[in-house]
Length: 137
Image (cartoon, rainbow, N blue to C red):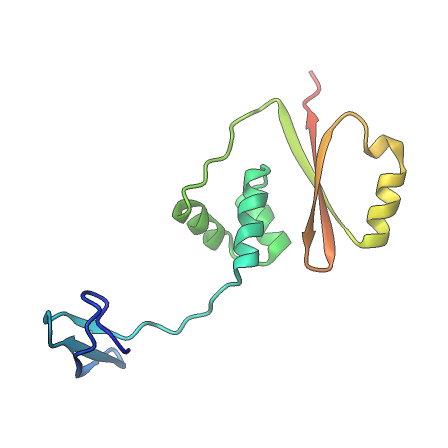
């Protein structure tokens, strides 16, 4: 820790250990703090993909299965970035995960591309096709 998180002063001194973590005290403002926890950081790519999939209508658990990140993490990201899903019950999204060759054969069949809107997004070395179909009445 090179500076105080409260006042950004560089005049800090060690001030004991708490829960096996070094504690510091700022000489300028008197603020006590500990060093930041070294946790596992998730790549921003997966955060962005999870939020995109959430906006496309997938549930937290579906996103968990696809990306491999906890549904609780996805829920926390949605709260953190204040993402609101559009509530429209006339459409239902379905998704498929395909390789590049499967994607080419999928789009070569006309029945797969008619009567619905769709989006293709990259997921690492695979592709996800999200398709919206109207509910049949």
